[in-house]
Image (cartoon, rainbow over all chains, first blue to last red; front, side, top):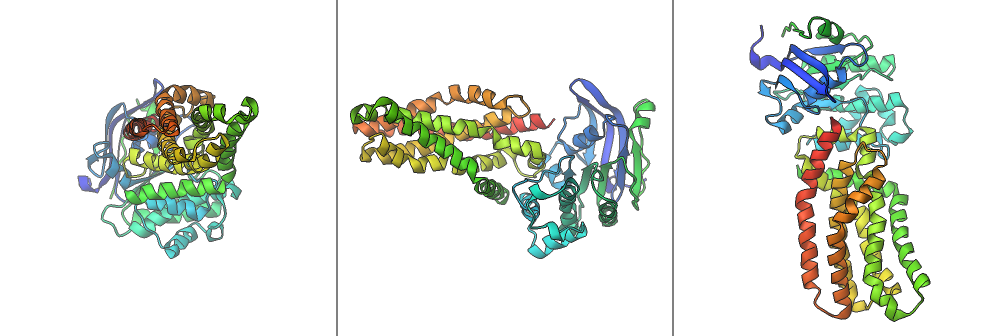
Length: 232
Length: 222
């Protein structure tokens, strides 16, 4: 077993309800630093609820979540500082250019990116040519890629930090082409190699170096308790 | 922290500048209502001046309220609220940034247009500074109220109607002291009392509206 300070996420008996329906009940898993967790499951199996619960966007009914050994919610601002949530919707403002959107997001997180660093982050997703485009003119796949540039920028600016951020991604592979998926896989591998962790929901296959799987359908069948073996 | 608030103000102002038609629409609405009054009432300066403060304030109210719904609605549709919630700074402070940006793009144009509008209604030139000050304070209070209401109606159908029902009753004190200050300035009375009360209401909104909006935003994200 790994020591507690190498555990990014420790989820114990997690129960999440949404409008009185129990979506997740009694879930147990731990995620070691430098691992990617791929959450799969049928539509409505609670993938998004799990992610939003981890992000602190959805209240947890029962159970505990430890983020880097700290109970989630005890210090919400540090929790938010420790993770990046990329939701279903990209959170990009249609009226701003792609670069403006990413720079705004970075400034809000206290990350000061130079123009070169910004270009490099866009390059990691292969979309330097879209930087000056207004987001309203982009296709859905392009917007999705722009949204993922946040992760590239985080990796680029924070990869030497002691605590690497936890990336929470809700179906990042929808709408993006196979080339973009390969770039995302490369980015995730670089992040986990640097000691960062990832939780992502997906329907598609993605080849990752240090990946664990969590299937919410089987988790539900096994009396709603799912334990996940972790390795450092 | 201040960097994030400034970034929000800058972003919202950039968006307002690019969508300038919305700002112009609000301003045109304001001037249009005021321009209609002399036509309906007749050009008698005495009767116009009598109702000038009331007309200015009702026009300001009618011109700002319809613009408030989209303060959060656009961000909500694009997923921007999640990012606001995940920003590692106190949410009420970020909301305050949005309110300040909203005041600059919605309230300030009305304040700047008010001297001209006042002249159309026969407002004495000596009263114009007080009217502008009262409008500046009042519209800031209104927009703070509006930002709390906009967060509250997120996800509601026909949010616009709901917004008006929520805001208008709560805006009454602003209307009362705003018109009182303007009327006092017109007749040459001391407007300080009404202005102080107006400032007090706006300060109260400043303290209460951002945390209230933050609670509503968190709730809407669930």
